[in-house]
Image 1 (cartoon, rainbow, N blue to C red):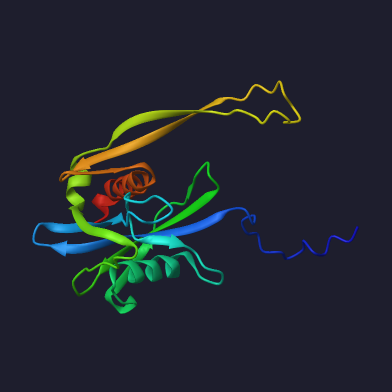
Image 2: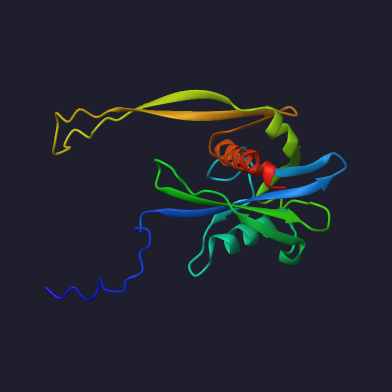
Length: 196
């Protein structure tokens, strides 16, 4: 066997992995920075009505940061020159073959609007509120059941226990992956507050 096809090969994700990116967009208010959230349009096929960050699929040839900015512009009706990219947070890998790349940015100018085809409403929550109020933690359990013709019938599948975070701030409930990403951002802020 000639193994040259592997030499110098750039590692990537397998084809069945969905790559997505989100933008934690900060806007300045008279009470300090606030985080922009969206309620997804109720007619969407995936996660209708859920609270999320602007974001979506990473297109071929696009970097995660480029995807996050493009999606934010499409959803919030802003332009790339209105966005100052600050930096990345940690990747998230879900049990559902999704790899999520979150990025933090600042809106430099202009009002926020929304694309009604994708977004039901836009709102902000003060960043300090997330710092001052840690999320509530709950757990879910998922039981794995194999098909009747699964080749190994007596395999002892584990019950998967997942941690789910909930922020309840300003009359909004921010939970799930969005809350995990937000919590990662808050933890990084707390770790580096003395750097200022």
